[in-house]
Length: 183
Image 1 (cartoon, rainbow, N blue to C red):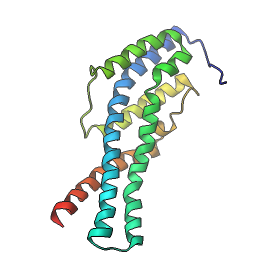
Image 2 (cartoon, helix red, strand yellow):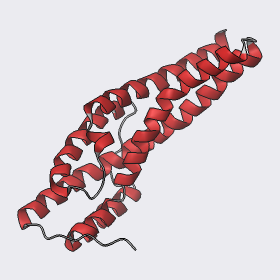
Image 3 (tube, rainbow, N blue to C red):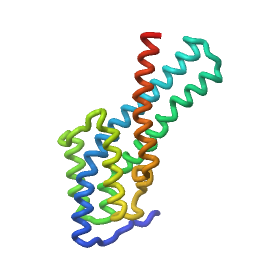
């Protein structure tokens, strides 16, 4: 049975942590929604490209498999970001392990987000939001230590890969549309 980790934080650290979480939750929720959409688009485009290569243009199975794998790589990178963001949505539970009084305030924030009272991100601002989440995640990492892993969201190399993957999936979607209607 896992042990419950509890710690006592000074009041200024509690307030700082609460302000970080309150700014982070709406971004995490909106960005996770956008990434989920891009994951679905990435999978659909990969399937479409495989169908187009193999069945419509009669390329060999090896070329089709290589193209499918290359088209799937950006989607797999986005899966890693989406998974990390979904873990961050459990912030009230994590905060409950750390400080009891912050948990209720964060639950109210999550309920407001789920009720639709949080601003949503635009489609093109989602890539920029990865950098905002990374900045807040690296700031929160100093406070929360080993309660949860922020490596994917705070690593600059992974952020660059995430933004490139986001753009790549969108470009693959456009290529899929061009192949469907014009070639």
